[in-house]
Amino acid sequence: MNSKTQQHRAVNKWVVALVVMLPTFIEVMDTSVVNVSLPHIQGSMSAGVDEVTWVLTSYLVSNAIIIPITGWLAGLFGRKRYLIFSILIFTIASVLCGAAPSLDVLILARVLQGLGGGGLQPLSQAILFETFPRREHGMAMAVFGMGVVMAPIVGPVLGGWITDHWSWRWVFYINVPAGILALFLTLLFIFDPSYIKRQILRIDKWGLFFLALGLGALQVVLDKGERKDWLQSHFIIILSVIAVLSLIAFVITELYVEHPVVDLRVFKDSAFSAGTTIMFLGFFCLFGSFVLLPLYAQELMGYTAFWAGLILGPGGVSSFIVMPIAGFLMKKGVKPWLILLPGLSITSYALFMMSGFNLQAGFFSIALPRLIQGVGLGGFFVPLAAATYVNIPIEQMGNASGVFNLLRNLGGSFGVALSSTILSQRAQFHQTMLSQNITSYSPAFQSAYQHALTFTQRNHMAASSKGALAFVYGEVLRQASMLSFNDTFYVLAIATAAMTPLTLFLRKGSSGSAAAGMH
Image (cartoon, rainbow, N blue to C red; front, side, top):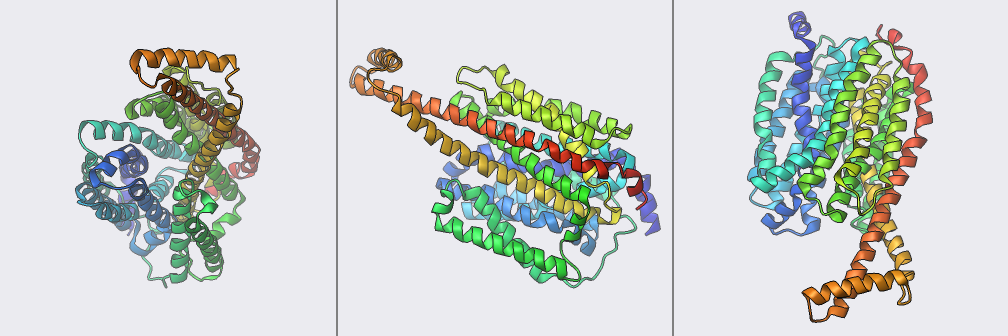
């Protein structure tokens, strides 16, 4: 064991960072890369909209179940062994997804892919924290953050390009060479630390059962709720009740069982509790905007999937630049909350800028707020992650990382669900309000109608009056949709600004890094 530990310490920390971030980047990207391929998968498999969305839901459900128990599984099997197993399962499942002859096989393969990929985020974060000394945890989180934040941005762009030029199946096949390379590098450069010892533990069966049932039901509710009209659907009501009761039973079980599958006592640390709360709320707002921006560009501005993905690019570049700077400042002694506070403020301002979008916006005016948001994001993720773990003993990093990443992912799922709901409801509201103000005596209506009538008469001589009315109604729908996007961005901006006082709870924890280093 000592020889392995010495080998581990001899490996350059940046080599270790590169090794663990490669599979993590691919796994996180896979949560978004498939989105733009769904219409192609639907056509290829002759499936309905509700059926094909299970390609996304199945992955998210299995992924969410594995993430919080990663630390327990690493202790059970050994971390290096479990990391290799996860990469192998993810890679094999990617091949099965690409070769799937039917939708049912594709969904089953996606479940397997989620089970394999779920452990990669917590494992890589725990390894980074262990490899970098305490005073350099900011730099470690800069590396981790660049992967986790860039992957959802690159995903839609890459997925759109591959789908358009090759086939949706290659969206999965591209994981294979990366997976093989990650396996090879892991075998060479990753070693278990001395404190990780394979243990024969009594399996917490009830904890696993309640966790799987609760998180599975919750993820389906969040993914399908808007489409099913939430509590108007008996399916959603039943799953919501199952999720709530199962998760309550899970918490009670974990607090009293001798060997919990997820050690919830980590929340006794105030810095960790505050940090995970801010991370949940932060990704709640972040992923909401990630979904809204491409939708606005495609549905209202007529952008292709590829160009809509490029709109997210400037934000990715600015985050990529700012994250290492944030890590460097923390290494020099700047308190994490002093970076986090302006980071949240800048992010809120960027979302407020997005709430002013209109139907005449150009590419630059849409991309600029994303660029600014990326700056804020760079000052958000890095210091928050470092401050959250500051008092966590190194032996508990695997467990804490699993909980942290679960809440980060759930925050994103909740944000997407709520943003989609607000968008839909406000669109109906604005459509009703705009329609009430349209009368045959309105000068604006008369002008729009005459313009539409002239257009239809030139192109469609028959039924030109009906065509003109349809044109005006279509414009009303576009305006109502635009206003709903403005409202939703505004809500996200206010929610982000409301989080800033929470950073004060991290002041006490972030000042204790010296003490934490004694663990």
